[in-house]
Image (cartoon, rainbow, N blue to C red; front, side, top):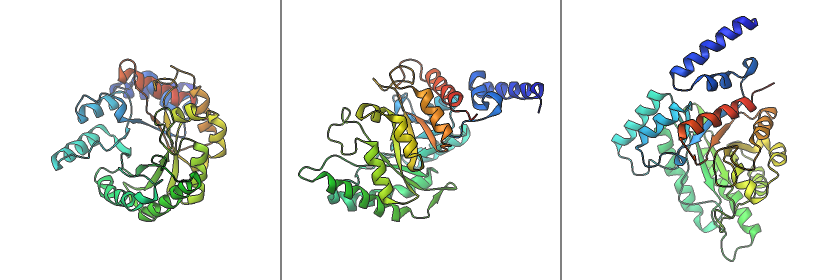
Length: 304
């Protein structure tokens, strides 16, 4: 393909994307300079936007911003059959898939909650199948009073091993089911156990199961310990999802202190192929900010 042919094809892609509400800048970012794409996919955590709007309208806004993947936090907990049907119809109409969900009531860090946590996972799987969602976020839970950290660390390992046995070999929507352990910073929740991704990676390594990975939340880790890229490089094979928001305030990349261009470049260099999920609180129009965030992530993370 020569430069003229490439330019023509690129222009056509931009027009097509604009017709879908993406805009020419996003179309160019998705193609990348020279036609090379970023190796990862990009999603948005739905709880961050338009929480006063009906579910289907929120999906429409996500699609308008140029996204075709959405993360949930159990928004379906009280849905009727009719509401499930409407949500599934709308996501299919918009070409959206639900890639991750969260919101299990029990966590892996407390041995006393082990059976309840496993029941949560069992009960969630049929719902995940119903909405074609292949991954679920698992929490460590809060520090258990009177329990040594070493014991709680081991409880996280044992709990994840037991949960992994429940999803062993399972697939949903053609993808292997995955469990994603998440870190939370101590400012957001001073009682939470797993505040460090370094320890999170230790736990995932010890579980030693291909369906268990860490959700590396850069926002939380910047507040907790920083040194984001070095830990990413050392543990990329155990990273199953990353969450994006800037510090302070949990707003869009570029509003705070995290240099996200370098993070995206590092993810691309390491051939990270899982999701990059926007989990920031827009300060202005959410469609505009989400579109700009996706353009940045694709542009900075395009392969060389």
